[in-house]
Image 1 (tube, one colour):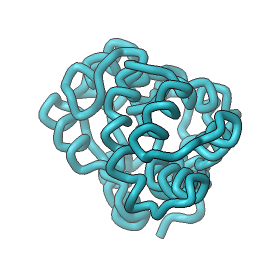
Image 2: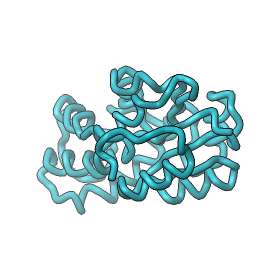
Image 3: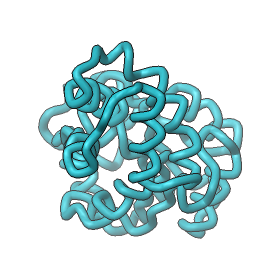
Image 4: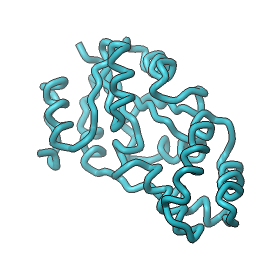
Amino acid sequence: MIRAIAFDWGGVFTEGTFNSSAIRALAELAGLAASQVEPAYLRLMAPFEEGAFDLPEFRRRLAGQLGVALEAGAFRDAFLGAVASRETMVALLRSIPQRYLVGMLSNNVPALCDLVRNDARMERIERFVFSNEIGVRKPDARAFHALSAALGVPAEETVFVDDSAANIAACETLGFTGLLLDTLPAFADRWRAALPDLPLPAGFA
C-alpha cells in the first residue's frame, strides 16, 4: 500500500530543468553563448549541490572559468530568477489528499532551498530533503535512504516522481515505485497505474 508520495523539484515543478534555464540566463548576463557557459556551469554544479560552497563562491568560480566579470547582484537575480513554474504539476501536488505523506528529494543548492521551502505553491510538501544539506546527490542510494528516513515510510510504500530516468532507475532498485516525468501524457498514464484512486487535475491528457 502506498502511503507517501515524493517529488523531485527541478524539471518536475519547473518547465524544463532549472539548470537549462539558469545556463541561458547566465549566458545572456555574461554576453556569451549558452554552449560556452554550459560545460563550466555543469562542472561546478555537482560540488555546489553537495554543499561544497555557497552562491558567492559559485559566482566567483564560474566567472573565473569563463574569464568574465559577473556582478554579484545581477548574477544572483539571473540565477534565482531562472525558475519557470510548471503549473500542471503544482495543481497535482495541491490535489493530493491528506492521507498521503508528501515529500521532496532534490539535487539543489543552498541559495534555492529556502526559496523552494517558502514557496506557497509547495505548502503541501511536509518533508524536504536537499542534496546540499545531506552531502550527497541522486542517484546515489544514500540520497534515497535519506528521503525514506525523513518520511518515516519504507521505500516499498513510497512513490517517487523525477524527470531523470537515471534517478528513477536508482530508486526502483531500492523498492520505490518510480514515476518518470518525461511528457505529461506518458506521466499521466504512469500516475493512474500507480495511484488509481487519485484523479489527475485538468491539464493532463
